[in-house]
Length: 396
Image (tube, rainbow, N blue to C red; front, side, top):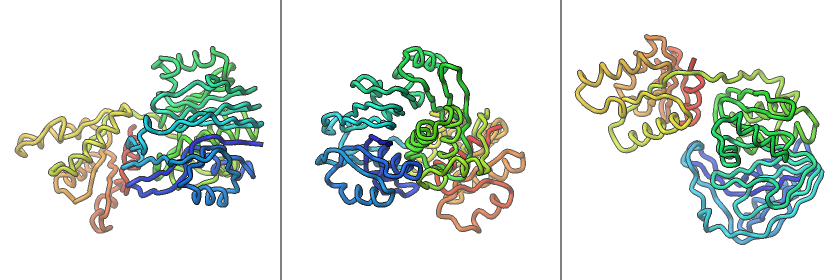
C-alpha cells in the first residue's frame, strides 16, 4: 500500500486565476491516484474544508484519514512566483500532535500544523519548507530505503553548503538516504546515489504554473522509483517530464511512463546572457510590474538591463542612446506590451530588426494590437510568470 502524508490547504492566485484546495498532500495524492488506486492521504483535516475533502476523495478515489482540526490554512499568491501570504501567519498556526504513519511506501511532506512520524519500507521525503526544513529522522521516522527530494534552499539549510556537489556529498555521507535528488529549477535536477550522480534536464512548456510543481515532482518520483521500481535517474527524468505537463496544463493525475516518454518534449539548456526589459514605467502599476519582473529575473541569477534602473528618466536625446546601447548588449528582450506604449513598441521593432529574440507579455489586448509583433516572430504570452520563463529559455 502507498500513503501520502502532507498538508491540505486553500490555494488562491490572482494571475493566472486559481482558487482550489490541494496543498502538498492533496495534490500528491491526486497525482498518484492513477498509479496507486485507493491511495491513502493522511493529513490534518480542517473542519471548514470538509466539502473539499469529500470532493478530493471522490474525484481521485483517495482514502483520506487523520485527526480533525478547527482552522484551515490558506496560501494567497499574486502570481505563482510571488511569496504567498499565509493565513493564519505561520507563527500563529496551532501545532498538533505528530501524525503516526506506517506503510510499505510513504511520501512524506513537511507541514505547517505539525509533523509526521513515519515507518516505511520505502519513503520519499520532501521537507517543503521555506522557513525551517527538518531532517527526516529527527522525529523518529524510519525507512528501509529513503529518497530525499530537496531544493537548493533546503539543501543549504541541511548542510550549510552553497555548492550543490558538496551539499550532496554531505547528505550522502550521513548515510540516512540512499537517493538524494537536488532540484535546481530550469537547470534540472542532480540525482545522487552511492554509485555516482547524474543530471536530468527540465523540459520546456508553453505555460508555467509553478504552484504545486514541487508536489508533482515528488509524487512522480514516488510513482516511478518507489512504486514501479525504476532506477533513480530514470525516475527523476520521468518526474521532470510529469512536471512539464503539469505546469503547462495543470492536469492530474500523472501520466504513465510510456505516455510521458512519447511526448515530444524539449530539454531546457542553461543559456547565458542579458535580458532587456522593455516596458512603460509612467505610473505606479507600470513601475510595480517592471520592479517585479526585474526582481524575479535577478533572483534566478539572470543579468538584466532595465531602462528604469540602469538609465532612468530624462529627455529622449539623453536616454534613448543609452537604452539602445543596452538593447545592443542584450540577448533577449522581455517586452510588456500592455497599454501599447510607443517607446516599448519601438524597442520591440528595434530588437526584431537586430535579430534579438522577443518575448512579449500581452494581456487584455486585441489580436489586431499584437499583429506586428506576432507576425515578426515575437513570442506572445498572456501571463507574467510564463513570460519570464520563456524569456529565460530564449537565452543562447
